[in-house]
Image (cartoon, rainbow, N blue to C red):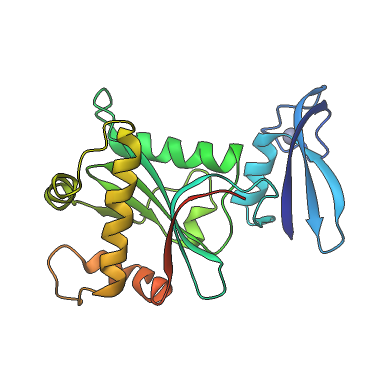
Length: 216
Ligand SMILES: [Zn+2]
């Protein structure tokens, strides 16, 4: 069944009550709409995740669309790739674990549209890519890891300093990188670019448009 999170958090009793339920007594819950009937179900986060993980629920784009740092839209203006840009944490050696947590929090707190590739760019490297199937599963590990440190640092140098906002430079570097991929798609044998083909991402973003700071 397809659901659409309302983004509204309230206090109440969870109607799903899986074994992991956190709201058998009045507690923080959220309302989701089940589609196509649009009936309301009040559910705690743990049960919502359980239902998605079990394949019972499939999440459509949440009504409160998440902020997207960099995205590729297809010709119908639908998001096909969403990129969350973060600086690589220097304090955390378990980058994969960090990436899984960031992805999970994004799903739990704002949702990820369905049928979208999700990339977490820990600038300058590594970048993690979830396929559309795993992008919706809160606990899923990324399907691909992209090592691109030399490329990103080179591109970062080429872009003039804007002293105001370091974060937006990083986003611009990544947006430029994707634009270049779209205008000159690397072939399958290009070194370090096999993930682009093997994931199916290149095919999905072909003829797409790169946008930044997408807001609903
Ligand atoms: Zn529950």
